Image (cartoon, rainbow, N blue to C red; front, side, top):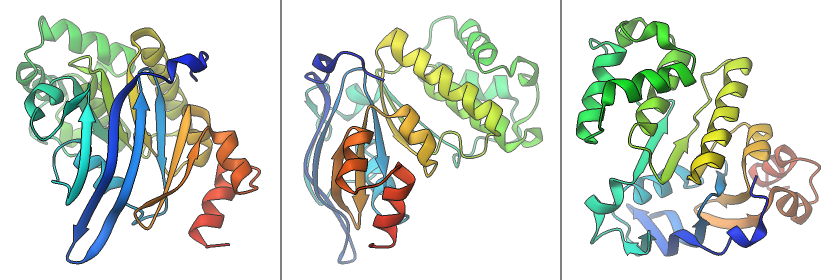
Length: 249
């Protein structure tokens, strides 16, 4: 968690009036928010709330219908390449070439990111995630949890200033999920990295997030620290809040 409230004064991502319409459907409807340096910002909401579409626009994979995205103070549309060099993304649902080994896959990405001494960087991250023993295995032979950790390593190769994580622990067992959360918080603290984090694990979101944004039907319906969002909806936990929103209680 961010211990110094004053840290929440330096926005690294600025979203204004962001809207995305697909075939007349407003997947994202005029949302505005900021993410700050060194912050973990949780993006929550039921399926279809607009989380994935928002992430896709922040990664310049989908063009907004309207609205502005600034990252590092730069307009994303006009500075896409420059911005994305300092950003990375991981999801439990991203596939890698199955016929390549873990090391071969990661070396490809390391070269794309122009990483200096890539092999040492990869080996260090494999050790951090406790999967050094799989470096010479093909991706097709890995468990879903191992693939998830390899994707997280890929996302950390270029030492990004901003990390977008979509369900990063969805396929991990409780022990490995806990170790992964601890490692991500350690990296955030040591490097001041900013993380936008989505998950359907409400306990995880409460543990990880400095602030929460709740989306529903493409709109922001709550924003603040976890305890502030709980108070707004009179919930004992974020899971209570989620259920009230999902069921329109």
